[in-house]
Image (cartoon, rainbow, N blue to C red; front, top):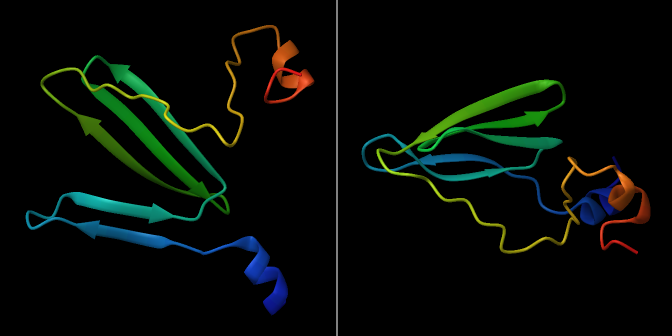
Length: 93
C-alpha cells in the first residue's frame, strides 16, 4: 500500500488495554467485521474479525446488559425485513 493510500484508509488500531485487574478496559481494533450477539439477558458474545482471523469477548452481568445504537453513520439496517431497505440504501431512499 502506498503512503497516500494509507492516509486515506485512516488510522489502524490493534490495542487491548487491561484495567488494574487484567480485565479488558479499552479495545481499539481496525477490522473487517464485528459480530455482536446477545446470548441471554445478561450476556453478549463479541467477535472481531480481520484477515480470516478472530478475537472474541464475552460480556456478562448479573443484571441485564443494555446495548443502544447512538450513531449510525454506517447505515446499519434490520436484516429481518424483506431486504427492500438494503436494496434502496441505508437511509431507505
